[in-house]
Every structure is written in structure tokens, then in C-alpha cells.
Amino acid sequence: MRDELAGFTIGVTADRRRDELAALLQRRGARVVLAPALRIVPLADDTDLREATRACLAHPPDVLMANTGIGMRGWLEAAEGWGLAEPLRGTLGRAYVVSRGPKATGAIRAAGLREHWSPASESCDEVVEHLVRRGVAGQVVALQLHGDRQPECTEALVSAGATVIEVPVYRWAPPADPAPLHRLIDLVAGRLVDAVTFTSAPAAEALLRAAGDRAETVLEALRGDVLAGCVGTVTAEPLVRRGVPVSAPSRARLGALVRTIVEELPRRTVSVKAAGHVLTLRGHAAVVDGELRPLAPAPMAVLRALAAAPGKVLSRTALLRTLPRGADEHAVEMAVARLRVGLKAPRVVQTVVKRGYRLRVD
Image (cartoon, rainbow, N blue to C red; front, side, top):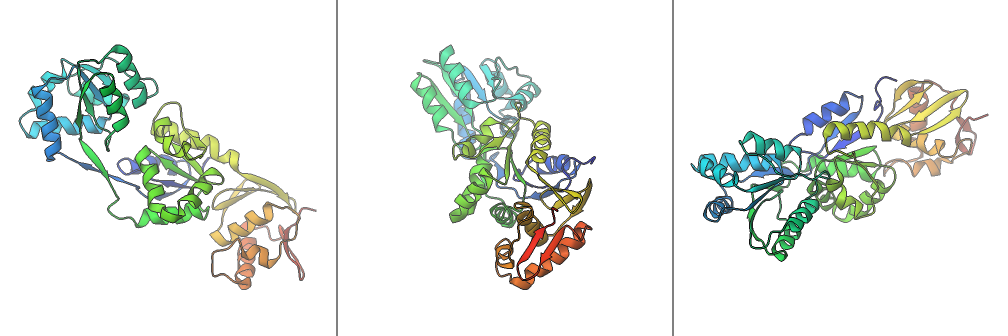
């Protein structure tokens, strides 16, 4: 098939670039569930940001640690509104500038400044290690925060003898409408999506926090049937710490993340031969002899159960356990009937009188 992700359902937890990521996935045939886990709240009028800016002007930093492109742009735009943009640019232009990644580098250059060093890993830890090795004792470090405070970075620099000015340019807040996120949590817990993408570590934390007492159920799904796709290793850290295997590209780019998913998801499919047909199971569809057959959740659940034990008879009671709560044995019969119609291969699922159903493998 031309569309590598056709038949797969993928959750997108990003906010700011969700449409871009969704378009990249949909272009490859995926069904996308948009569910921002967080939103960015700019702090252009925030007292703390203004005070941090004045602190940088009063005590010019020897080092600027630029974490994000949106953060650096927001800081300079806020300074423009206060009439402090030129003095701030002049002060930062005399500092040793460390940029955590390409987006921050782009913002630095757009402001007429230049970066002196950037880590290959795009990791805050590597930046701090570089600065400590270089020596920051007696120096002032302006730390442009990445959403929330980064106490581990600040403490490491302070321990090395630096004075740290934390610059809070924006903060993370819950999504304006939490309903899509809770819907995605339901889908993950029910293993009704094939993958979930994360573009920031706080988004991964936010999804688990929103899951509440179902967090462990969500983690179990992410450890098995649901692929966790992260834009980079920094984003993946909260999930890795909880034992979730993640797929992440070597370079933190949306396009690279999509390519990683394109490579990984088809490898996780189940293929079986039944009644002379080759069936490959995808998230919300089966590929029958190379043709995509979209299926509703209940028929898909029955097909997954039957494909897990080809040729074995599964009782209505056993199949009932795969369906949504509240279903009865009549719902199993309906799901099987819809499965046969959806597959357009009626002989694949065989009724075994008084026993149940099986995939016909003989």
C-alpha cells in the first residue's frame, strides 16, 4: 500500500504544533486523535519575567543558557514592550551563549546574537556539564526556563559557584478543554490507539497526571500494545523512567518522529493466513490480501482475539470479554456478523455450533 500508516490510529498530545504533526501523519494515511496535554501560557506581562530582565541588566550575565526558541522570542518581545529590548540585546550579546537546540539557535540568530556552543543531544544535562567543565565559579548565568522551573540545572550551576538568574518566559497550563485528553486516555487504556506522540516531557507527565488512578493502566498499555513515540530523548525521559519502551529519532524533529513511527508501527502488526486469505491487523483496520478493510472497534476486537489463537475455537463468553463493558452475547454475534461484512471474506470466521467461533486456517 502507498499509505504506510493507513489503518493506524495515532494520538497527538502536542499543543503548539499539533496541526503540523497531525498533517504529517495524515499525509501517510493515519487516523489522528488530537488531544493537547498542556498549553503554553506566555508571560509577557508577568512580574517575575520583568524582574528577571532587570536583574540581567543590573548584573550582566557572563553566560546565557537558551533552552527554547519560543522562550527566547517571547522574552525579547516582552522586553520590546517594556522598552528594554535594545539594552537586553546588548547585554546578552556580551555573554557566552549556549543554545540547547536548533530552535533556540534560530531565535538567538534572529535577534542578532550568536551562539557559542550547542549540545549534540539537545539535553539540558549536557549543557550544564559543559558549563561546569568550562568553569562558572563567580559568574552570572541567565537560565531561560523551559516551561517549569529546572531546579536540578539551577542547583548544579550554583554548586559549581555560579549565580543563576532564572528567566520564566512561559509556563505550562492544563488544556483549555480537557475532554479530548481524557478521551485519549480512554483510548490508550482500551488499547484503541496504536501510538501516542509526545513532543515535550511535561506533556508526558501531564497525560499520566490526568489519568489519575488509571495511570498504571495507561503505562501498561504503553509498555505493550501502544507505541510511545517521542520527539527526542529529553521528551522520553519521564516514560523511560517508568519502564516504557519508547521510539525516538536521533534528531529531535517532527519529520524525524513521523519517519520513526512509519518504520516502527508496521513492524508491530500481526499477520495470519485464514481461508486462503492473508490478513494483517492494524489499529482500526485489517489488510486483506493487500486491501485495507476499516473495521469498527467491536469487530476489530473480535478479530484480534481470534487472530491471537488461529484455528482455536473461542466461546462467546471469551469473546465477550474483549468487547466494551455492558455488552452481552448478542453483541458478540453482531460483532462477528459485522466483521464478516467488513472483511469482505465471509469464510475467514467460522461458526462452530454450540462452541463459538474460530479463524478458518484449514
